[in-house]
Image (tube, rainbow over the protein chains, first blue to last red):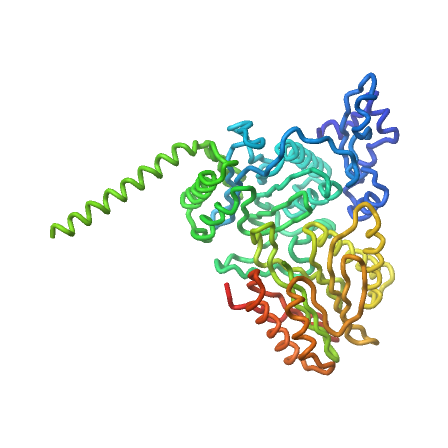
Length: 345
Length: 199
């Protein structure tokens, strides 16, 4: 997708029909002045600010498809949307947290469609570049698309400006790209987990703002005494299609997230070792998948440090369940033996 | 769910906002700052729908900064409030209205302190004290009872503490902490975060 943009590959007949004005300038300049472009976007309703080309297959007669909107896509709230064949739910458990050894991102691997397990082995954590992974929740198709779009935009930025965009900047970019679709059926909740390699932002100011406070230094009042976030180091930012963009130290998203928070809030500390952090993440996902019907199957774990992301082997939660059962019977057995021994003298 | 409050004194404005960023039943963040610095002496407190708040507030913020860059001086609080209201009104009958409730607090060299109440229907009113959110129902009567136009900074902070105590006692939701800031002729000052005690 990035190569296609750089080469200006747009000369299909359908493209010429749908995009009579050249889109190459839009692609190049669309993200140089966010506010102007996107204000114009809101007022005019055109999607010229979004460097996407969605190709409709050219149908010989479009009469039976009149109810569908014929523009490539119209992000307005009044666009005619295609009715879904089944009800969507955000069936997933994903989580991410920061600790002394970097960032841990964990997720289950079940894709549900109503009450059906559509796929038991989905990748909900996707690497964007060497130091950024994104966990996804919401509609699977939307997430896959927007991850790909984000990867493309980050790669384009890297090629154009010869440096990596910061995680905050990436989150802001994604949030602004999703904004025109607010109110439509796009359902995407991504958590960007990454490590900022460079210190300081020498680029223009629209990239530098912290998501939670504009103009004030970020204050951290959590009881765990995390250091205030510098521009270098681990970052965790939650972006969703509603428009929310939150930076924090621990996030869990999806139908299983309350269960995961229950485990994380009790045991998460800054000075966990890497093994403890990994096992905490695994346990949190396990407990969530145990209780939540829409999460399950396996757990994926990624660990991001200054050297980049590394991925653990995917683990079946069935094994974790049996281990947990064994542990319980063992403790019950031990306790029974102890009471018997105490009774005997 | 969210709470904003502002109290105007003879030469200052005291504002406070809760710190919770929520998503359905969960608190996603406990230290969210809902105040946006529009200029050296103007703060915009913004609550409402998830994405709209940051988007709209940052839009206003950047436009005010642009005005300063172009003209060499900053907009007064009254002008900033009217600019904000105009933008809200313009978007109100578009396909994409912003659902945000705002308090704009500022200090002007000539006019003195000012607190402006704006809601999502783009109504604008200059008020001596104001509040947004469900918490407003509980605290406006306290503000009515104890407010005096010539109250001192300490009295204003005490009044604010009374409001927060009422929220702790009667509001069904837990709002553990509040960011508090004071604007006077010296600029914007961060005061100590107030906690409702119940963690």
